[in-house]
Length: 206
Image 1 (cartoon, rainbow, N blue to C red):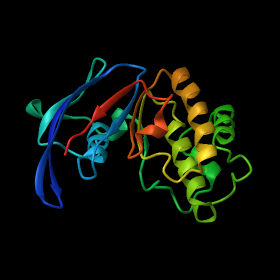
Image 2 (cartoon, helix red, strand yellow):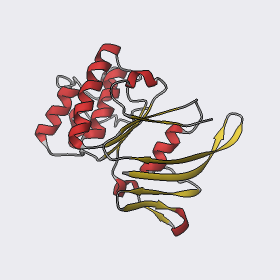
Image 3 (cartoon, rainbow, N blue to C red):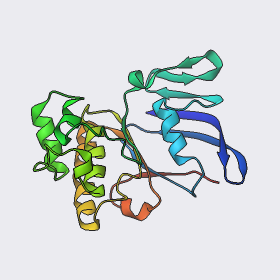
Image 4 (cartoon, helix red, strand yellow):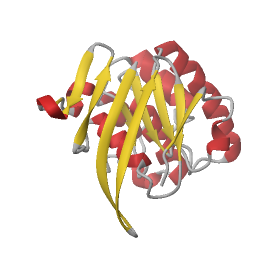
């Protein structure tokens, strides 16, 4: 369970606004986060991960306080340990597909399963510049799963993936999420692509 109650100032094209989110994400739920561009969807994920600091708020994960601005508590991302899929992929240019996964885990069986899930098992010696946009995005998704995280944050994780492959990948990910008993938050500009995967939603208003 993740309890969030935060306020974060944002600079947007028409000036400034305040991102205010108060929500509880139950353990094992898969939630789509949607809303207009500039509403703060990506910022919310970064605040939860510890990559951005709100002016005011509190985040509690289970029995652990991750953030409490009033009491000056702010756990580092390394302590929170979410799996994070960045919108721009954020891959390491000098690492191969296999090295991206080995960087986080030594579990060979799990790595092989992820490679098969992402249809990248024949490309494990390729570096990002030799992968298509869709392949890079699939690698970013796989990397987020390497540590078997209990919280997975995904920012537009399927935008560059071929529609047919996307459908198969989403079906496979649903199985993995259930196995991990992970709480999953997915930002999407195309909420319809998540039908059959999510069981909750959060609208971030402009």
